[in-house]
Length: 142
Image (cartoon, rainbow, N blue to C red; front, side):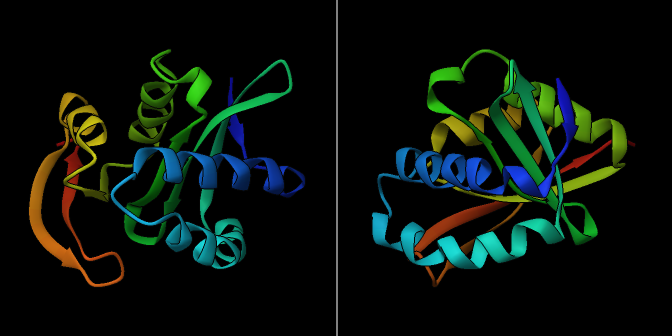
């Protein structure tokens, strides 16, 4: 079930954020994610966060920031490929006319997931923080 994020669940959500980023981005040093952990933990409550929770277990979450920017979509590894990411994305599509995000080109699973869900590449750019190339992708309901 999808529901609004409650600050009491911050540590659980942050564990999913860290574990999933390290797992999905083997081309970026783990230290990058660890070094950004506290910054993300401070910023996360400023976003609109929607969690997917069943039996008191948070299985995934999505965060949308200003200007309909998806800052991240994360599903715990053991629950991936169960449609949770799509449900979270569809939930946001029902709330926002336009959604934008950045995704690393090397994260092929994520790129393909967004293509399948109606996103198109808006541009390609180099991230100086990670030394990796990212796509900016957009979904437009119209």
